[in-house]
Image (tube, rainbow, N blue to C red; front, side, top):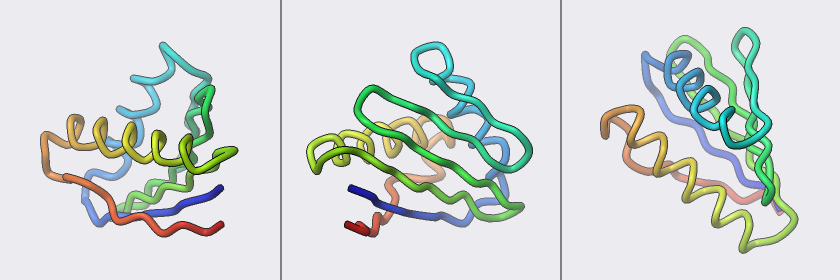
Length: 94
């Protein structure tokens, strides 16, 4: 299962680094340049940060895991953005 989303923010690189650094204590996670990833037990989150856009691509083995990934990303992004971003609009791609 796959889902994507993006959001406009002038703090995209900062938010990507905060998410990756936070989860690197609990999961395999890293970033280099404008791209990063977080590999959870239940799926993977790839992140790309441009100057004004933060994009996410989620991959998981099933719908339940995908829903969990979306919830985790939404919750932590809202926290790290201090509620500047409160929920992403996800497009499921199969």
